[in-house]
Length: 252
Image (cartoon, rainbow, N blue to C red; front, side, top):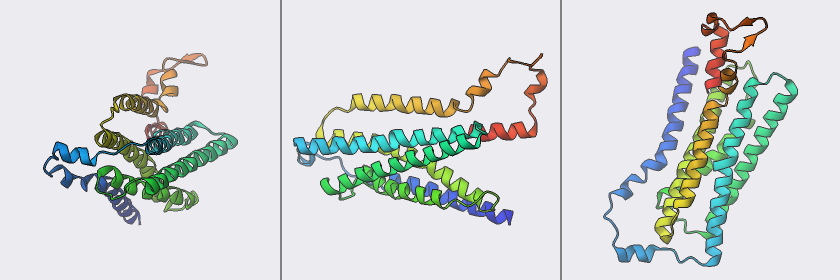
């Protein structure tokens, strides 16, 4: 039975990873096409009216607020529960995570609807293809979240793995697509996006820093701290099996 569960987990992991990469792979043939002439590029450029400019800005803001901000915040909130033992605090963190992620899903949906109603949707470029796949995954994730099995059930481990993989994979794919969108906007309008690219990159660096050190902060603060009448002994550097397990979990 254990072998079967491991096989299912590997299969699901492979499938989801392929889904994440498929949208990028489909864009490769475009890179082999002959470079467009200056005249063709000029013809393909968007004529920005004030209304269209506002719609593009709103679309970008909705997707950034959803994938580039709220989804990472939701991840940080649920990871905080790893260090909380109080039942009430755990409930607050859990429902905060659910609320933040559902707002993120609704904002992403609003951005997708706006794009479908007002933009050209031939799906012949990487940004649109990635966005389509991303939106499908965004709605699969809350569905999986609501169908979570109770603790102690054998499929719980499979559910947790899939939910975790999608929870990390969707923001990563979304962040990649935001960069692709900025590049596409620059190509279609010839407007500079350097400032927005720099600002977004700075935000991603901060998010990555918080993610990496979120569970390490308390551990680092305890180094060399005196516990009661005794200082931390060298034996503390050889943690017990339960301590090792907690540290491995906190790394995730």
